[in-house]
Structures are given as structure tokens and as C-alpha cells.
Image 1 (cartoon, helix red, strand yellow):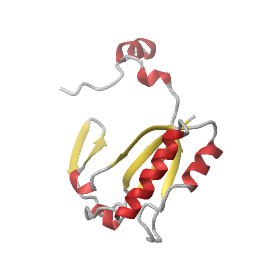
Image 2 (cartoon, one colour):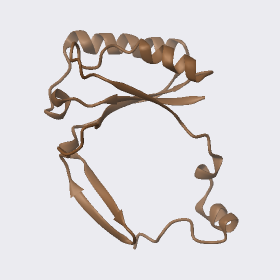
Image 3 (cartoon, one colour):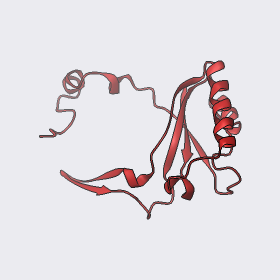
Image 4 (cartoon, rainbow, N blue to C red):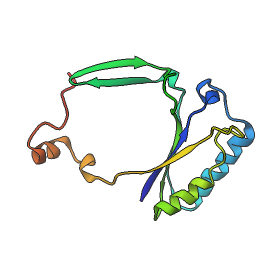
Length: 140
């Protein structure tokens, strides 16, 4: 079972402040433990929302908004994707994550199971045939 361990962003992260050397070392150690256990699939840290964009869908219309996104209270700062045997095992790994922002009482992670849907990896032609219609709108 695959899970995404989502690290919520913080004010410091959004301001571009680097984690302390101690926190970097603790996260590095935790990540190595995931590797050693064979549970690590992927990980990354994300740039601040000021470097991102959002695309809002209104029917066929697309509205692009540049970051930052100050009206949003919960932004993603980074993530690990892990492959474990159960939700409980994912929770146990989650409880071992070093506090992402040191002693900040607002630090939080979220654990979400990844949907195992083979149809997403299928070619759009196969999906179109199966659905009997176009899989995605043209981006022309």
C-alpha cells in the first residue's frame, strides 16, 4: 500500500527560510531509515507558493493565478511517498517524522493513501475506447 506523507508548509517555509542544520540532519536520518526499511518510494521539498501557479477550472475556461496564495491556510511544503503493508504502519512511520518546523506548535503532516488505479497509467487511447469518448479535453 502506498501512502503520501504530506508536510504542511509554514510561515518560515513560505518566506524561503531554510530549516536549521539540526532539523535537516534529523530529516535526513529519518529518510535514511525509510530507505533502509525499503519503504521509501519518493520524496521532495517544494518551493514556496510564491513560485507556483494555480489553474482554476470554470467549465471550459481556465484561470491562471500566480502565487503566493495567502488566502490558503494549508499549503504543502513537501512530501514522502512510502510503500508499507498497512495504514497503521504508515501512521507509525508518520509519528517518527521529525517536527518539520522545529518547535513550531503549528507543524503538521497529513497521511493519505494513494489510489491504486491502473486505468490512470493506461494510454489515453485505451481509456477513450473503454469510455467511448475522449479522455481529456484538447489543450490546443
